[in-house]
Length: 130
Image 1 (cartoon, helix red, strand yellow):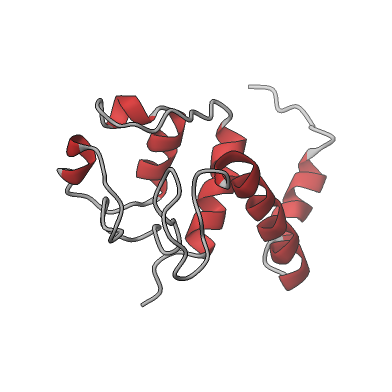
Image 2 (image 1 turned 45 degrees about the vertical axis):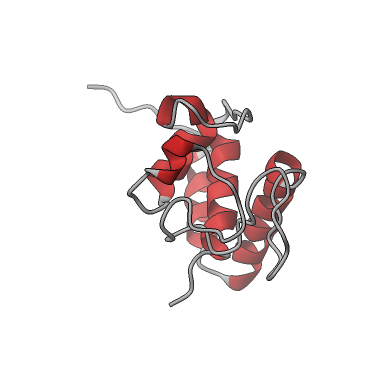
């Protein structure tokens, strides 16, 4: 087996190491929030106490049971969902909601895994606080 030197490998390792520092985390979180707003912000609020829009308020959704926002009318299939929103569920949901819950009314799909990861990182950052 031949090992090839990848010129970007040192930069990638540096970038991963830098994720531990506050400035890099803040920059990554800013990018994640920007992606969330671009992808989800029209239909979903994230402010405490904000009413539902076309979709439920997503503040605290990461780590919360599915279909648990008071005052939002969920599809029958989503009402029956007996799971908690985690990274894997959110990734599948954002990629194709109708593949997860066939009768859902959410029509948004994000094919780009990197963009989905940003949205999920943002939702996790504002997720369920214990």
